[in-house]
Length: 295
Image 1 (cartoon, rainbow, N blue to C red):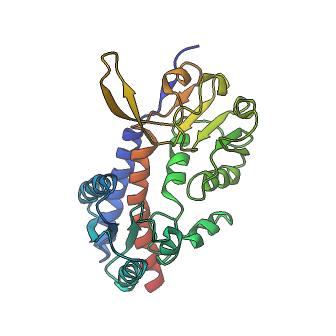
Image 2 (image 1 turned 45 degrees about the vertical axis):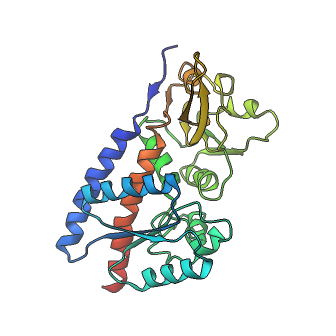
């Protein structure tokens, strides 16, 4: 069979950003300026790169962006104070907390303190819980990104057999719920599921969010299935000359699976850029809902 269609996450993200630009202009005409404030504790390299990327894209779409940087020795009380201040600031319409936090700070506890109407990542337990009722204030960005990407390949979810590998509270479980709400028949697995390939080979749609590089190979995929790879893993590759380089790879062995699937997302360039764009869409949605509460 022919090689799979490569789902271009950058192109999808670009379309979302154009949509966000129009929505931001509409809000500004109504006197509301969407403003996203990110909180970063310490100087994790990945967090700094992500923050710069956020600032660039926010400026491009007209969203005001600020980064609050806290010292690495900051304790939970310090982070909580910052979140409370941002919750109470009416000019702040979106709040996100960069991960990871230092090990002495409980991340879910801090996420719980973000106002659900300003929680643009959709990670407050209240927002995640409301996903199960089909009425989220703001849904998790990555789960929304997966559904958006599935929509680009034209697969009919009603009656489709979807297998989700990964049961994380922020990604895997919300994705399973969102797919079930679209009338897919969903099987939820993880990397320890006995005979994992026996489950995944029955999938019309395979979503992988286990966080384990190379978990899914060609033998796990039914010919013609759609494969969405959510994994982001840093691995070290040794070349023929013995030189080692770091690479970002997904949970799916891309070069194998593209020869079996009908469509597949690459890593990087798949789910990642769409997730960032969903953060912007959620920022606009948060501003709209806050406006509705005050009018």
